[in-house]
Each structure stands twice: as structure tokens, then as C-alpha cells.
Image (cartoon, rainbow, N blue to C red; front, side, top):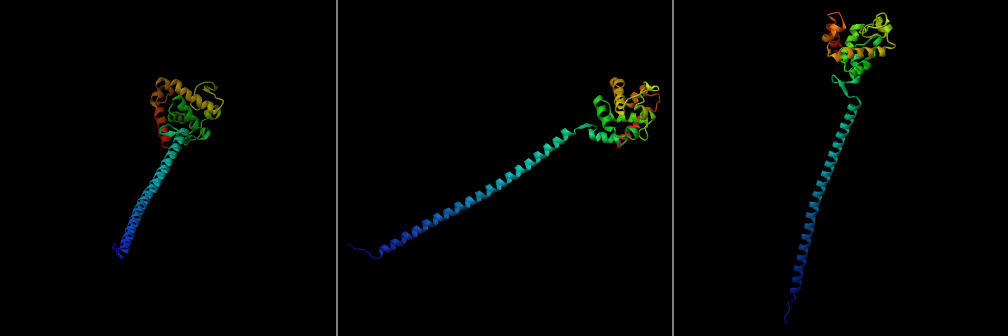
Length: 211
């Protein structure tokens, strides 16, 4: 049988090249797969960071909202766009002498009774002069609204200034507000003989609000 001695090496070389090509294809496929994996990994990491950042931002916003709600709940708006503390502070700027610092009581009790706290304060100032120096009726009788009665001549006497303030606001609510007399002009004829009383009270109201 005839045998070509050079045929085997030739065939072996072909097989080696084929194997090398196969290995190259496998390696190339692995490189492609690795690149795809790395791209996917980068995308996943970016998405993870973005998600965490969004969560952090959302959590921060949620915390801010909760804190604001707590502030609102602890010190809500009560009148004229002001909290009770702010309203009291505004009133206190017009209260001097014996009645100094009573803005919180006037504000809170007026609102409780449905009385305009600005008007209540303005009437006190008109009746007592406490914008500067309180009258003897306030200093000696704790009477802040010129209320008639006994104990101080023809005027009412109260055991404390707080009692006198509350009695004055009760009087406004009971004898005026409950009858629909809610403005100085409507209250004037029944409260005071001076026809200029309402005008003076309104001036006080303007000054109080401007503080």
C-alpha cells in the first residue's frame, strides 16, 4: 500500500490551526461576555447609587415634612395668620405699666370667648391709658375696662389683674358680641357716651396691628 510520508504532518498542522481558531473563538466569546457583564455591572451600580440617593432625598423630604407638621401641631395659627405666641407678642408691644406682659392672657381668653383680641386690647388701652401709664382703676382695683359695680366707688373691684381681664372679656362677649355688636362703631352707643370712642378704639387697633 502506497503511503505518503508528508501527509501526516500536514494533516496535524491543519488540526492544530483549527484548535487554535476554536480557542480564539472561545476566548473572544469570553471577552464579549465579560464586557457585557461589566457594562451590566456598571449599570446596576449606577442604578443602585441613584436609587439610594433618591431614597435618601425622599427620606430627607419626609423628615422635613414631619418636622414642619410637628411645629404646626405644637404652635398652630390661631388668628390673623399668627400663632398664639406671635399674637401675644404683638399685643404685648402695646401693653405697658401695670398690664405689661398680659398679651398671652388677653389673646387666649379673647379667642376662647370669640372676641377680637385686637379690639379687646384696644378697648383696654382706651379705658385705662395703659399704652403709657395705667389709671388708678387698674392699679388699685384691677379693673381694666371701666366696668361698673362695687368695691371701687361705682366701679367693680377684682381680686387680681387676671380676674379683672377675664371679667372684662366676659362682659364684651356676654353683653355685646353675643348680641351681634362686633365692631367699635356698633359697641360705642352702648359702651360709652363719648361719640369719638369708636374712632379712638380703631386708632388703637391700627397701632396694635402695626407693631
